Length: 322
Length: 261
Image (cartoon, rainbow over all chains, first blue to last red; front, side, top):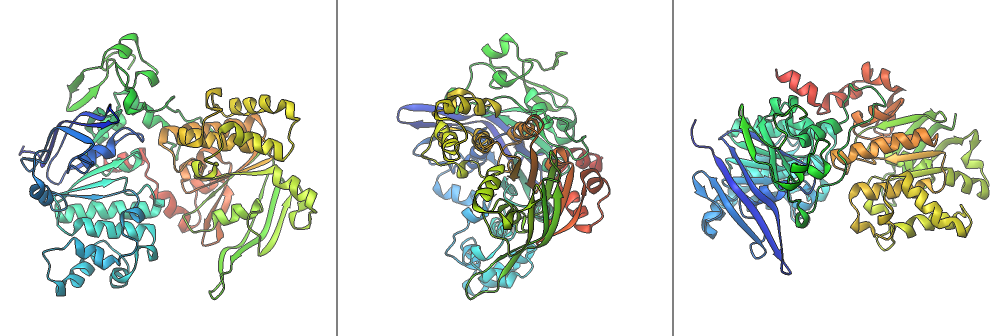
């Protein structure tokens, strides 16, 4: 297989604030091949978004210290200078964030915001290029939308504008960070279908960050489950979701209300909450919430094991109780 | 029948603009101890309907009967009793708590305002309520910002249980929460409903959530119910195309995986 488009190796993000050091992302490794579909799932506070933003060094550099390697097309974005980084941002890796109304400038017309992403295009051609991009995202009346302010558009329409902006520079990788969490189910489906078809048409890889396992199944090819700043399990979507190995993955799956489940069947939740980055447990980070935890889980961090193309970070991996 | 709604209409009027009809003639009934689900997308009028039932928004037309009494004909004292008996839990838990009040103050306030128990027993009642919603006593003196989203939602439930309501309207109580926390809050709703013999109206855009809790379900679109019936019937044999569209749009793990194989 050819070299992956994006190869993240032992990425860690450390914040230093008022003399206190925290590491919300610690040693994250994964790869995305050209045109690949990778999902990162986990609860809030697991470090998913910070990992995504670190790919192009978006976290504030004066406080965040990034270590490890982020090889994008062969170059390490963590060591790039400003110009090099500017070429990667947008052109190489583009982002769509969760809340489109917060990502768009409220006092700028849609066409002017998209035009900002088209620096190489001559002024006279910008409007046409903008409308072309908006048409691509399936907006019903692209010419009208181009002249609108964000507040005149619905959430789904705003997210389509965000997509148009992300696609403006023909990125090789689209990072979609909870792109549909703020949207209704039918709109969610339209936006996800759109991302799918655009990725196919533009041969673009997609990194989808979400806490909704339902949208991962059937759309993405690989999944990484993140907990407390680490990837605890990864592999092909179908195999991870049907045969989860890590107790955290199993917990997440059991918590999803299913349509065909009997009514009043209690949902299985995961007790406790994600620990905060200044209090990561010494052993396995999930041990305090794990139903199968044993003494050694609390004391020593589990090693990452690999089998059948799947990685898992659990002491109990392969044992009968797991 | 605990609550009976006949041809309810809600209209918003802005000077100089065309009136907006958010709810355009909705009729339904909720049995005592029942769980009634209302599903639909943003802007379909579900929240306007809920706000009208609890009296936050006047109805433009229609009749609302609670235990057989028309709420429109109630005198002030009866309406106060009605307001006490019907409580609401909102979507944005943190946003519906006062950021400058601790958990204890938040729950105490309703107990005092509605004179729910003698002053000497307030402290005990607060602990009892927190225990009921599964919160440790350690959060008593915490402010909302120190709590997680799930904990804030529990405080909202404790606050509304303080009034010993008959009917609770939960407007998207879990849509802002993580999936694991969502499961916990849904389990709490179910237990509370069973143990306290509460009647529940659950508003959600997530059909799987409604399916999990409710025995009756109504599908709302553009201010009207397009389908209304027993949950099993609506989910297993949806009649209206919009219900089918909603059902098809749910990202369901098992369904997506089997479709791909």
